[in-house]
Length: 119
Image (cartoon, rainbow, N blue to C red; front, side):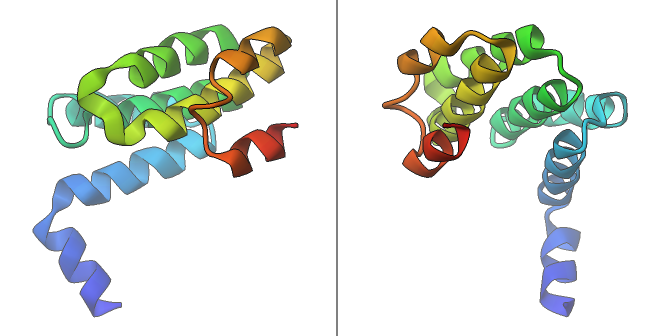
């Protein structure tokens, strides 16, 4: 546990990213908004911030908002390391919004296990 604590102590942006993503999974959009806003100003954490915001929107059933945020992330060439996750959660937002046909537009970009789980 000390190693984990020390890694967060030396990299506060990493800790904030973990908090934002966890908050996003639980739909805590208002809570993570200031954290995400800060993380978006940092080049290496901007993609994670967008992913967290998109996740929070999905859990709050704001599928249209999630689609906008996640599509922008999936299309951003500077955030390539987040493209697969963004595409997977974009497919989920499409399905939950009832836009099943749009899933095909991201099917080949998302991790197979995410597409299988979505159905």
